[in-house]
Amino acid sequence: MNKRIRKKQEKQRKQLEMKWLLETANAIDAAIQEYWRWREEMERRYVEFYAEEIARRMGLVPKQ
Image 1 (tube, rainbow, N blue to C red):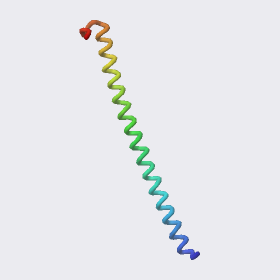
Image 2 (cartoon, rainbow, N blue to C red; image 1 turned 90 degrees about the vertical axis):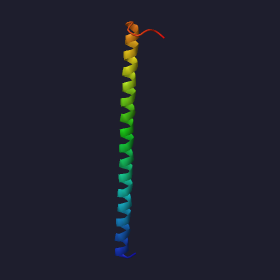
Image 3 (cartoon, rainbow, N blue to C red; image 1 turned 180 degrees about the vertical axis):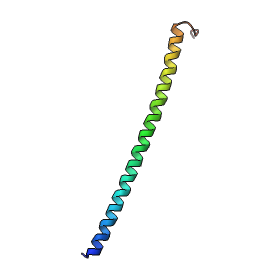
Image 4 (cartoon, helix red, strand yellow; image 1 turned 45 degrees about the vertical axis):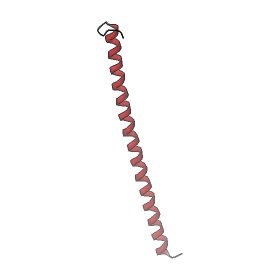
């Protein structure tokens, strides 16, 4: 095989590899961001629930 052709194929392979790595990194980043959004939402809900429960136990909120 011609040396020039091999070089071109190697360059294309490296470009595809870099594209795949970048796409993978972007997907991982998006998943991490989604996880933290979910975790913050769950933490907020837990705090609201806990505050309501404490208020009920203290008699500050009428029982339903």
